[in-house]
Length: 334
Image (cartoon, rainbow, N blue to C red; front, side, top):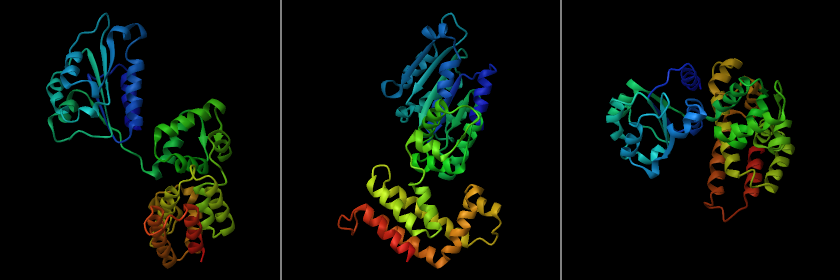
């Protein structure tokens, strides 16, 4: 995120490079930088003759080079954006010759999503000298809540830990989807608002009481009544609550509890760091560790593996997923 801010700041300050090679597993930042260049480098009057968007599946490297070597018309520079450039992965190294001597009046942007070029090869090394190579890395689940907080903080909003966790558990690590939902909330809510679980439920449709976050908490507290209520809700709404997601999250949760049992330093800050969780949730994990001794946690991890296999249809004779979740709870609470 800091690298993105620096690239944007440099462009705003007039320090514009001839080549921007944007690559990596996370498309959100690739699109963000590319869109900023598309919207801001040229004026509206200049864009008509001096800005073009090409698509990797429709062109060859030679087409990119010939367009990049053109001179701008009645403007200081031209912008050439290549979207889906990863479709040119077999021949992308052929761009190295142009990168060695790029047209100084052209801003060439390559969106190379879900892949990376080899950093040992000529193309990478050449672009690093004359332009920008940006790698957009996928965030881990535990990093996304902090990303949400930072994005909102920069726009004069805040969010409660539970609300951000609800978004991550419902939308995963797709930053584009999460950003779209945040934008919806910002249209509805005034600046300075702290986004709460109630806002999430009312405007995005994620139940604040019946979700994987609350199921995990109920299990940690050994609140079987609440846990079975949530699982019954999941059974009535299977499309919004796929079992594979629930089992995966519970597996990660009990794996973290196993890790917690093995820690010598139980200081809250050390626990948060070791488990890679928000300090807000440390007490919840500590309580769960008291409720589930290490031996029981190990048994539950094995049970979750078994339920996961059954959920995929192995040795389960088409047992409904709702029944498998109830079976899981019975074994956890026994």
